[in-house]
Image 1 (spheres, rainbow, N blue to C red):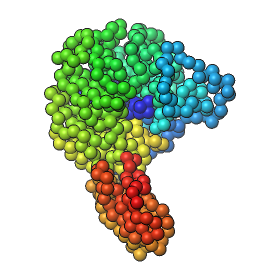
Image 2: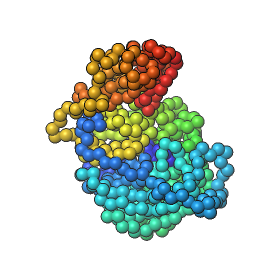
Image 3: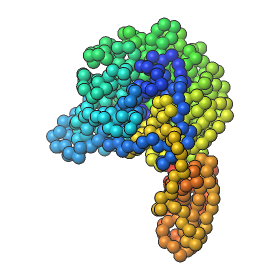
Length: 562
């Protein structure tokens, strides 16, 4: 969520390392939020590098409710978390009871999200990944949420984890739960209620090692981290944390024969002994609202944060105590670090975004030498999802649903940008030759078609004949390497102007309108008006003032200067 609470979903990472969160490194599993290597990478696989809303889509299914959890996959089963309003209005008494102050919580100076008044279902959904057919759906809890969530997301931002026998779910204030893969509940634990900063919501995912399930619980009350017996749900150990709300998922690593649980937080990054919860080391210097999760490789843990400040540290393992400002910090960066997406450590290079922008940086993982910093990825407009990688490909999905295929290396090389046509905040998953992307309302399985034929244009999206237009310009409007069409409607025809986007096969499968029928535009030109790297549109109007339409991070055009 990874997530802000929203996203976190969405968030992270990297290259194959000896992390122990992976239940099984087999090619047909994605058992945790960050995959079989617990870092967003897979060792084997060959998913497509080209697709659209109609090309190389093996199946597409509508997902009920909302959520930004990453698909969790074991063999033919795929699992998603989702939350959905029942439409039932809670009574005033129930609302008042739900809003009781949580002991130890800190007062919130600003609450940006309204308190919910409708009862919600908190569900887990199992899908046959071969066909997209729903196998089962279970309601984990049905209740009135005690606080709201970030406007970009719902109440299902964390991702489950599986060991191939059971599915473990951290619904936070709605409990921690264990199910069989057939949908039978085994046990449930109630850890209390979270009160998150500004009521942004919850989003840290659970992680597994052996028979131990780790859950982090950072909020505005008494924060803690707890180890549960995965067979029974009983507490093995619990350690209080001097932390405020964060959404980072713990990372389990083994170094010099010792298994550690590394957790980022606003005050410090801490490492715990997985046996008893003893703090092994800690390091300060993070920013607030920590969302990116740590990643491990080359004997170092890499941590980052990027809200109200910029911070990234490469921390050498093998040291104890307070490591802040010591030689244990191999290198550090204080510019262009990520807010929501986590790092990607791949082929001994660290990749990360600047805040939530589609501006990528690449550093040498050994010494922190910058290869490139804050380079814009044309065609992507804001990023919540964390990058994933396999072999010589990095997949980066933006919030508008466009995915850039990037070649690893010291220079930014964007091979292609694929347009899905649906907003995406959840981090994608790779299993074998298939790529799974959870959009705002649909789940997509992307795979190479055995027989590929050009997609036909639908009648309402076909480019209008020239006699009905006053101006046509051919340009690459979205930076994906394909030529698109910009149409000004003319003095005599009603309706807005239109931008038609090439799907890579010569068909125009997406149209975005701009302006109104009152404009009567007789010319339109593609320009980067404000120098932000996005292609804007300048129009000359007959009846209304001529103006510029500025492209935003969602890929739409908003009225600009007249």
